Image (cartoon, rainbow, N blue to C red; front, side, top):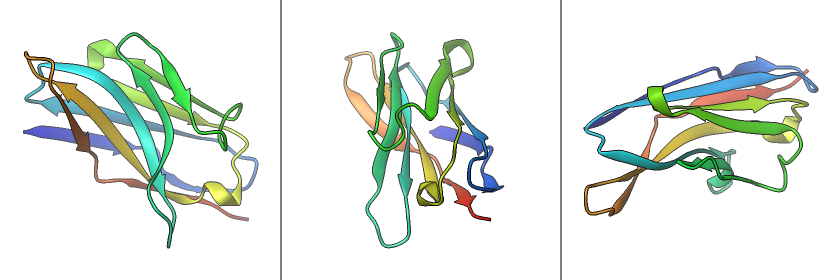
Length: 120
């Protein structure tokens, strides 16, 4: 089994900042990538940012220049620094871990989600 501990969500005013963190533990052989996705009410879940085990990053166009993803490989933890937040960033943010087994087969796992609300 794989366990997630997500933290850092909350209510922030437009222009403010938040930092999300997600630690994964349990039956892990190796991690190919970790990332954050979000889902706003009435919308589909969408990519926010991902980082691979060689620190290659990918960002959604909507967050480029405002959000920064990073990881601590030793702690199996991924962070998302969110600056210049906008009301349209309001969503439930889900941590994703793309795990590999010893045959290099990949399996996605999801955290429980953390609410981010940007409002004045």
